[in-house]
View 1 (cartoon, helix red, strand yellow):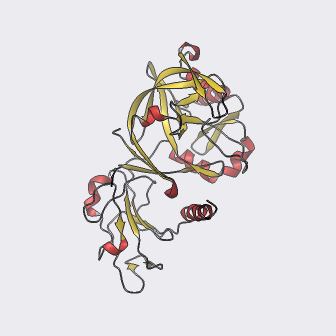
View 2 (cartoon, each protein chain N blue to C red):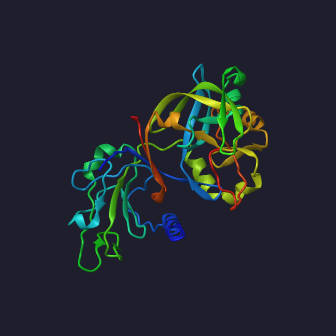
View 3 (spheres, rainbow over the protein chains, first blue to last red):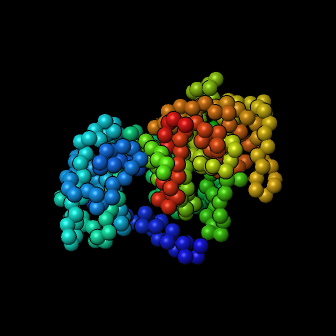
Amino acid sequence: MAVLQPAIEDERKARLTNISPTIGVGSLGCGLTMSWTDWRVGTEIRFPDVPHATLGEFVSIHWPTDRLVVEQGPSGMHSRVDTVTIFAGREPSAPRLPNTGVTDPSGRGMTLTERRSPAPGLRERELEWRRTHAETLRQFENEWVALEGEEIIAHNRDPVQVFEEARRRGIRSPYIFYVEPTDENIVRIGL
Amino acid sequence: MWTVSYLFRFPYRTVTGDLFPLVMLRVSNPAQPDLSLDVDAYLDSGAQRSLFNGWRAQTLGLNLLDGETKLYGSTSGSNVEARLHRVNLHHENLGDFELEVGFSLVQIQRELLGRDFFNLVQIGFRERQLEYYLNTTP
């Protein structure tokens, strides 16, 4: 386990610090994996298996340490899956994606994953705000917060008061969440 | 070899400094659909049933104490008392579900989607990739 743990942490760091050269429209972060050979859902493309392809429209590329991820941005792209083609031409030295300057420095190959974003999820703005404003939220630890867009509508230790304030502000379906204290010594479980 | 196909892939989300498999749902009262709340719930394969805060039931127009009593046993051996109520769950990609959810009589810090929710969808985790996968068909 001691050996495994650093590897897991490295994976998480890689995930959080992806370099993201982008062409077209970015993804909202959900989708499916497709195979180059038959495009069936749930399979992946390994770089060495792809001799040549070209980038299709509405495709962005994320480049983690050893994986190539191609994402589709606009909703309803599932029906256009066949219009998305992918370049992954393997050259003897450094494989390069046209129009991107992206190469495979590892030379070990890539996993190609096609994603789709069928519809923006509920509360995307609020979730993004929470992700980018963790420090702001720390002042509300142990409280309930109603967030609408990028505005904190109400906060209180009593969630019902928060709900009532949100309703007073005309929010029909308030998004109210609890701000847990940040403590690295706490390991969270369900109950 | 077994292969399971998924339509939707979702990244874990950052909460209190770490990443968790969370699902955003719009929860409403079937008898009063105009009363709804957006709830960020943890996917918890170790929970037999889903558990939400009791105050949410009240704001949805449900009489919390009218529901059937259930005790949710924690790993410490203590129980959280809850009342079961049927609610509608809406997910932007997956659609609508009806589920009998436990609403706690005490305040809880995390709302859980347990195996009763898992029974409505096909779900898979890749912890190493910090992603989970969903299909609409169980």
